[in-house]
Image (cartoon, rainbow, N blue to C red; front, side, top):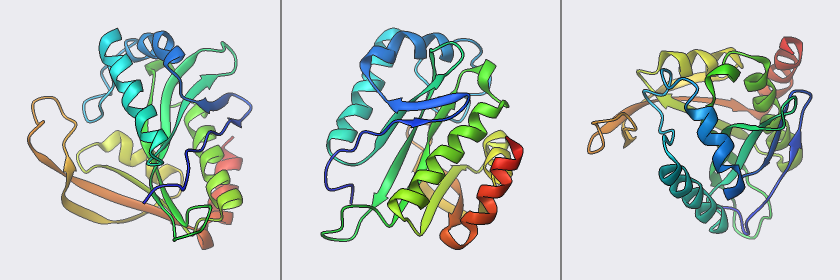
Length: 204
């Protein structure tokens, strides 16, 4: 179940701002995606303009149905979009305006922004809003079990490993389109959030 109605948010940090995703971000995102594609083995990242437009249209359609809240990640120094992230797997109780649990995922950054403060700051913005404004009790984060870089990043922000879900979703690896992947599942719950928040702020 998604949000009762589509939600558009802008979350602003020192180095990165998360703004509502739009078709106008296509050129910037394509440039960011093609800086160096070496880290995208387990994640779908569009590679040409036609694919980028289709990708954005799909995310905006999901937003309209309340299934996701997608963001362009904007490098505040340049003003350019350098990646995408979103809230998804949004769980709401009937007649309640905000979710009780969400996932943060569908995330990618251009190569030059990876392993910088931008990713940590973006996660802090998303988590802060989910726990502080929506009042969720849980945030999910997950990865292909084989994606060591993604799993290390999730663990660095303080998420707890919960186990491996077998055949959880379609693989995003090229050539594995008809296969289902094993997914490493992580979470942060509300009781852990104050400690995790302090950890993230100290890293920044």
